[in-house]
Length: 343
Image (cartoon, rainbow, N blue to C red):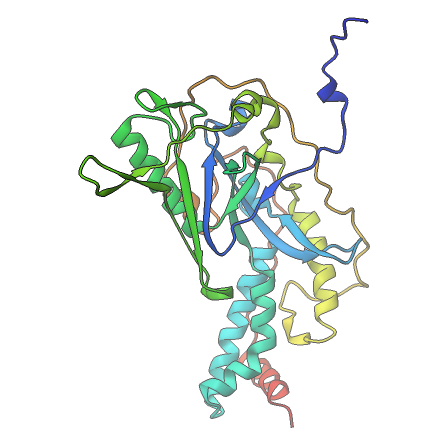
C-alpha cells in the first residue's frame, strides 16, 4: 500500500459547523484556548461580533449580517437608521401625549414602530470555542451580560490560582482549565444571563458537603484534536461593508414600508425602485491552524468591548457618507401623529 502523505482532512468539504445554544436553565461548558492565527486573535479566546437580523434579498429568509462595527469601522447604516427611528418614536410620544392620549394608548399606537426598532437593532454577541459535557466542540455565543460575568470569572481564576481557565490540561496543581455554568432565566425581553464556575459537591472528612470547582478533564480526543477541530472565530459571520449592509437594509425597508410607512426616516427614504437582490451569506469552511501550545496566555481586554459598539482600533477605511439626521418639523410630526390616530 502506498504511503499517503497528503492530509486527508484538507480534502474533505462541507464540514458541519457545530453551534452550541444557551438554553433556559444551566448550560455547562469548557471555554477552549484562542484558536488560529495569533495575529488575528491576539490571545483573546473570544471574538466580538455586532450583527443585524435582516431579510436576505436573495432568499427572503431572516438571517444575521455582520455590521462594519465588527471590523472596527466607525459607521454602520443599521445603527444610523435605528437611532433616527428612535428619535422619531420619541417625538411621536410627545406629540401624542400633547393630544391627550394615555400612556397605554400611546404604547398601542406606536407598537408597530417599536416592533420594527426591536427587530432591526444591532445585537452584540461574543463567540468562543467551547466544549460541552458530551465532548462536542462547537461555537458558543453569549450576550453582553454573560460576557461581563465570564470575564470576571476568568480573571478571578487567573488571579487566585495563577492558571489559564481555558487550558486544555487538567493538572490541578500546575495547569488546569475549568468548567463554567451559564444560567439563562426569563423570557423574551426579560431574559437574563449570569456566569459562574460549575461546581460539584463532595463530602469532606466530617461528612459535610463541600462544593469545589469543576476542573474535571476534557475528553482525550478533544485535547488531541483541538488543533484541527477548533473554529476560526473570525469566520463565524460574513463581514459586510457599509454599502453592502445599507443595500440589504433598504431592501428590508421597502418591505416594511408597505405596512408601516412611518418606519421610513430622513436619509433612508425609498427614492428608487426596490434594491436588487444581493448575494446571500454563505458560511465559509473554518480555517485550520497549527496546534496550540500546551498552555496559552489569554487576553481578556478592558471594558471597551461592552461599550456601545466601540471596537478595537484597526486600520481605518473610507466610510460611506452618513445619512442626514432625522429632524422632522413640528408640523410634519403633528401630521404624522394624525395619521397614527386615524379617524
